[in-house]
Image (cartoon, rainbow, N blue to C red; front, side, top):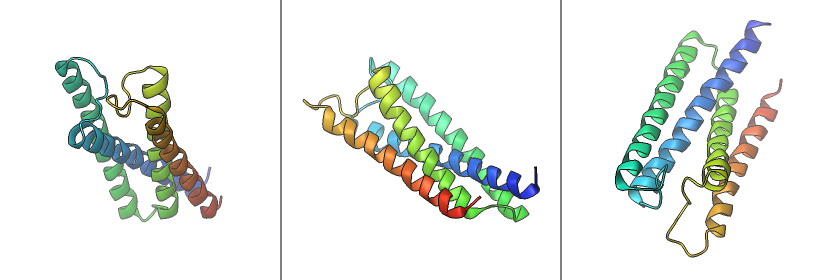
Length: 146
């Protein structure tokens, strides 16, 4: 495998780490903390706090790992910026869609907005954002070539 191929994969992974971390942080800060719509696991206040704390630690670890990789690749001059952006969008969309389909629907850990009388519009919007981010990431990667 050529060095260029490894660098392109590394750039994609770096972007994906940052994308998952950024989307998880947006979810936690906006929907868990500012709006108070949901928590990672609905339940007692203690369960909500602990589950949100675990999510917080996880996304911070992803952001730090992605940031360190980004800096190291940039210093070496082998960061493929377009692949990193594509990876960021794929990571963000993947997190969003995983959260919507697995956490919200399959495992029923929480709803987007549990107090709402009709969850369908929230679920559709939540998952649509994930699909749009995945599509945008795919388009960026497609334009970056092989």
